Length: 143
Image (cartoon, rainbow, N blue to C red; front, side, top):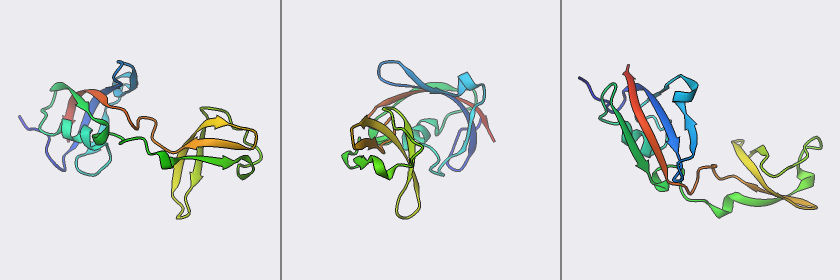
């Protein structure tokens, strides 16, 4: 029976959990496995490291340190922005998602962390940055 190797395209069912057991994402719930090609940088490194050498129908649980997931929380990605820089039709609220463009045209997702009188505080870190993750994996198919 073949094993997952570099450059293989695979279908994997997964359930991602935080340290406290809270599920943050699951392909099982959606009923559709995740399809990706190994070594393409489509997923966090720890996820691919966990799938390599697995066989079809094999199940296992892996723990991924924040360094091999979404990294540490970067303080420079938390910024205070004047409200007058927002489009007029946006009324910022804590927890709201916003999209911004960098000077080179790249889109970044932001979360509003605080709303003050004249400014808002936004966070460009991935919501799972700074967290160790656990994934339950099952290789469904090697294409």
